[in-house]
Image (tube, rainbow, N blue to C red; front, side, top):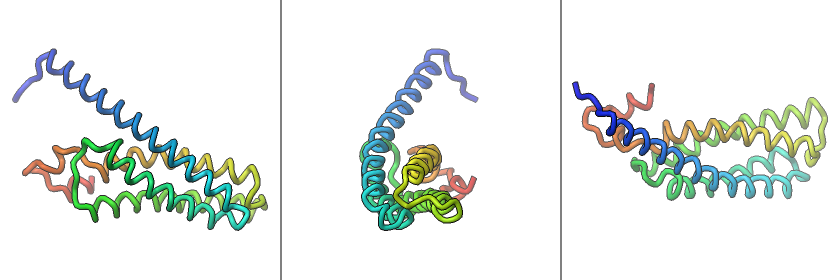
Length: 163
């Protein structure tokens, strides 16, 4: 069994915090730009139907976010197959879209708010905020993997992702 010396433990923790800070900062920047895209499109399209507007705004902002996160936020992480990575990324965003659509539909239909009302715009922002927390965790866990998990010979990637 190997033990970490205090200085190497300190170096490891310092390096881990730097990486986490880089990921959070870049994720926040990409997220802020994606938020502008999402809210802008949603606002412009919501008079034609809030649910359609949400689907379009999410598709466009998610595409932007994929490239931004892959090449900025998580650029230091391992690359797996492009198909697996994009399918998982867009699958996670599909989950958040379904959640958003259900909540918006609740406010528009049973509660009777107008598609372009301030309340529906506010609910859109709330669902984006909740989805962002879920997405950050899910991207790190399932999409942009740590290089040790991808390149280690004794790690079964399918088993690791199933945990």
